[in-house]
Length: 290
Image 1 (spheres, one colour):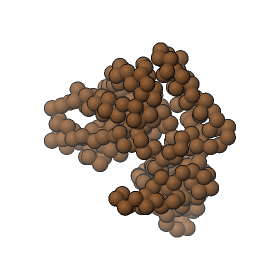
Image 2: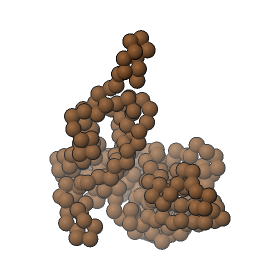
Image 3: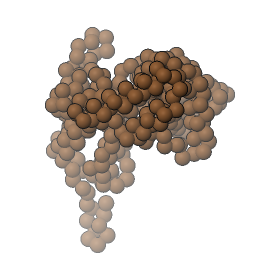
Image 4: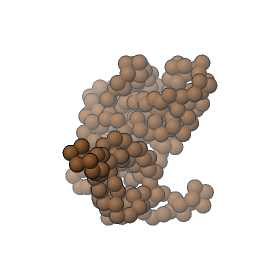
């Protein structure tokens, strides 16, 4: 930015070592401590679940979360694929090295020092483990300002495997979108470790819709879409999905899904891309501003 009193162009310098330190701390915290919003939702679900088996599962999930936080051990043995959404203020000048490598080093250090399971293979077909949970998937966005906002997510493989993308026809409309979401969750059944959170991305292109669905999972749990049209769709989908009867751990019950969260983007006149990203109850994400 330009200082109007001096006419000098000024930027904020930030050493990439700070990115490394932040990410190393964050990947451990998200694996050890569930977000309070998630815990509150699980408690509420336990209070209204009518199935004895489902209620027992929910109580065990709450106990597991408390043990993980108290003893600083992973909530789940699957400590996730690290996904990072980074918003870089355009008035920030990153110094001290390669910013991408600094973020990867944060993942590397955090997983090793935190004794978190490495789950990433270097090649999708030859399947040799990288042994440090890198590389992470990093989404960069340039934004106004002089801050760096980092959101780190640990995304489990089971729920990711149950996710889906579909190129609908514009004529399919809202009904087609909702039917696809219900179909995806129904096919997942108990394999995605319900109760689940459902991120839905609508619009853009094929890859944009998938990124939107992932980003939707990072909204505070239960925070409705700011547009009433889409917040209404979220409520209707939540009701339909919980009528499926899949229940906690797939053992039957009222609570299959804790929340449905939608993100949208403008799209082509000929298309209607939709992505559904499933997440188990452990919505492991954390945001920090540097």
